Length: 178
Image: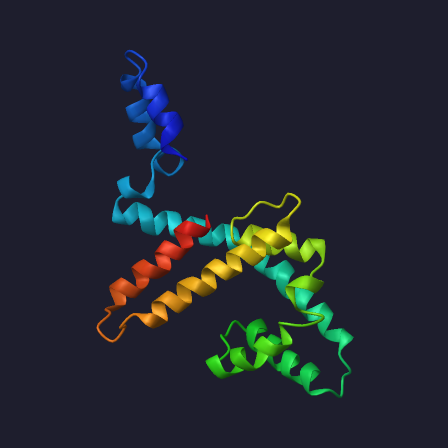
């Protein structure tokens, strides 16, 4: 995807004198990640993460507004409120809390089938997906792909993994999303 135009231009006579320096100056735009240094990979991942942060706040606000649909006396309301309070202070919920929320996020009002167009667009932008019509299908496909990656990870023997290997897998997921 990135290398095609670059290779096509570099086949023209004497264009290598122009295309090679440009590719070296702008590796993220013109070269695939195979040609990046480790420092560039880390820096580009950080840049991509910064782009995603812009869309986290609107998604959080949309989810928080949807909590008003629940009856304030219901268990779902209190579970969601506690979950959002944890997120609002910058902490991460525990695995048990996430598993408890999975049922709530699979049905109305939080399920993907009940997302507004604004919510779908923000989620697509977080994952680097197109915001053109068909957002819901693209988002469902991406969710399925991520679930299959998790399942493949769980099938492997992870007891021998080092922190560096785990970070590389996480980085691969980030690169694939963008």
